[in-house]
Image (tube, rainbow, N blue to C red; front, top):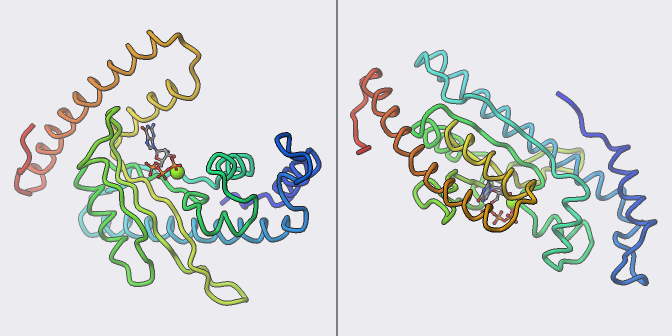
Length: 240
Ligand code: GTP
Ligand code: MG
């Protein structure tokens, strides 16, 4: 496990404080006396992220042992960078304070769980959600209700208790559950949206093609899911 780099966070925050606020030179972009609090907060988010990943690893290995099936293909996790945290506060016109991060931001700690099949997405998510020590704060099911652009994934925000010397701190972690096919699609759509300077006409063309791809992938996934169910003796429920 690679630990959180507190020195880097400190350097970035100090730079932000020094450079000040372009829009409003009288107020700093971030208060200098909250740097330590910010670093402490990030350490708690890191702890919460590790706790949820461990729970997911335990579930995956239980499935492996009992059912000879690994529901999780792989996982990715990240802590939001200082720049994206402050950028998001600014965009949402929230005060540049650690308190407003704690109260308003639920994706500082993020985990992406990439599963083999759609059934795995729901079983892993449901087993995690039913654990007695964690709370489900929010669910967005973009698999049942895909976004207009074709994006599919199940987003759950959990709150998990992190035990520190000062007691327990319930801390949010955003988990995105998706299949390999959904991840394949989302990566390309993300690249198109954030990394491309193509002219609008080409962007629109690609977006339309991506929407078609999303539908095709959904069909392929359903057909493969049905074969997998048949092999494993589960009833076939879905129409391709
Ligand atoms: P923001 O985090 O501010 O976007 O708001 P939110 O948390 O209400 O949004 P939501 O739960 O819908 O999405 C959170 C995350 O899901 C994003 O940061 C992305 O990682 C991912 N996501 C959502 N929509 C899309 C999409 O259309 N395409 C791709 N590639 N990823 C998406
Ligand atoms: Mg988000």
